[in-house]
Length: 213
Image 1 (tube, rainbow, N blue to C red):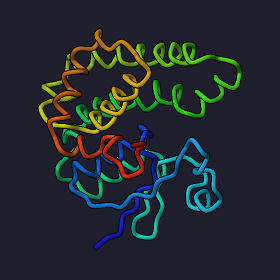
Image 2 (image 1 turned 120 degrees about the vertical axis):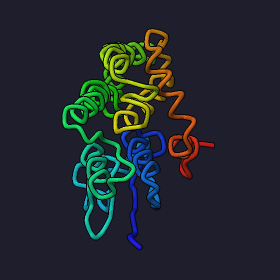
Image 3 (image 1 turned 90 degrees about the vertical axis):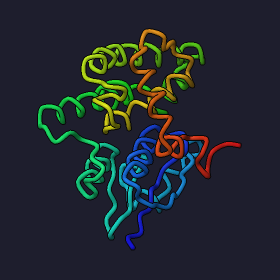
């Protein structure tokens, strides 16, 4: 049996995405936690296998894969059933673009590194929350339009896709920072649908062994 180790952090949305994808595929894995608050991800033992010093990283078959988009695409290719991308090329591109709105437009501006720089420059928590809300609102507004057009309960159609792997962690983070989500009813419905599935529930931050209790 293949030994799969996921390096992550319970509240990392990028790690959360990968947990969801693995769970949807029914793949067993063990977790190795790196507390981002203490800088554990910068330990030389970790950067030796993940030079960028970020989570997640996936160790499998003697290889270490980094960056959640690449990891999730690899998971999809390695275990194609159940599919997390539509077979139709146009539809698959739409799903990837939904994921990219979160992974490229929202998340990089609101991850821990950026928020720490804001705080170090004198921004108080209210200012940090306003920064987060600004970029979340811009991205989710675009995504709401796309999911309203293409969704059928989930982000695209009637079954979870890679887009849902990205959406659910982003909604979680938005709630953490008190972002008003009422303008995005279609996204909230998709998030609610996802939480009826054990794959999403079991991937939630509070369900992880390294979560704050």
